[in-house]
Length: 320
Ligand code: PPE
Image (cartoon, rainbow, N blue to C red; front, side):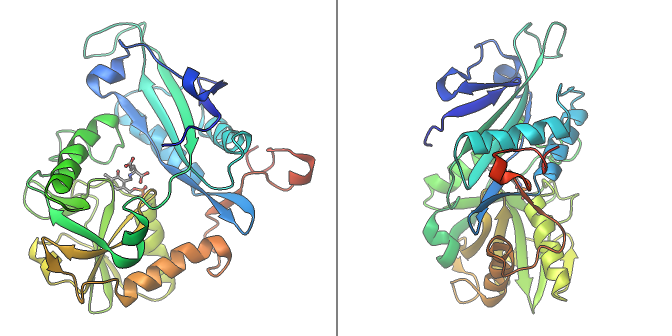
């Protein structure tokens, strides 16, 4: 990770190394944080945010599940994200907004005084599972660790604590020589990758596990579903068995960090012909085409950071 100049922290733009917190911060002890990953793409020389408002709304939704009150509105966070990206001089970026129970008292149930602190970092982050995987596909295994069971820790809220599960899955995969691991639900159906949603291609149709399969309902997942439906491709959200993986024509991951990453093999069995298939390539072209104008942005997902008054150096209109 390469430091950028500024981090937004509780309303202030601070030098990167000064955005720190106390060691008795509640979230460090109990996992009580919620966060997002948002990308800004360089769209033919103009930085544009991809579905940023929806990401920030999801962060508010995640906080609501934990009865955590974020002291900034979606609009205020949106403005901060745009300004931070521009002030760091980035044309493309991965943004990491984070809200966490801060310093004040110890004890699991949060008691006063315990603020909810908010930070946003903007960094450069290339291909999540490596540049090569984006084309050739990742080597993936099914993890021996299952995903969070329903009514334990809610997978649909993007909370820091959920990523203990993701760490176990991903670390096991790396230890065994794979790029990434897939978690099954506690009843053994397909769930998702450690930090990605999963798509299966079979007979020209797309299938993906439903929200009830202990997944985070990804915004990239939703984008792929909508792009595919726009092209007349059938998409099913349905529970799937493990063997579906071994019988798939193609498999791919989606996520803000992972974007669209093909899966080349699953548990050492080649997926289809063992390299990126035509449907995955078509979905990648549709997705990445949004950022160079090859795909029409018919859902209004992209927003210029600067709005229309860029020549005046403002950051206002798109974020007002
Ligand atoms: N499932 C999980 C568990 C997950 O962490 C992500 C995103 C997704 C699905 C896809 O969601 P979306 O980004 O809305 O399409 N993971 C974030 C964090 C990755 C990390 O390693 O950090 C991300 O991609 O930003």
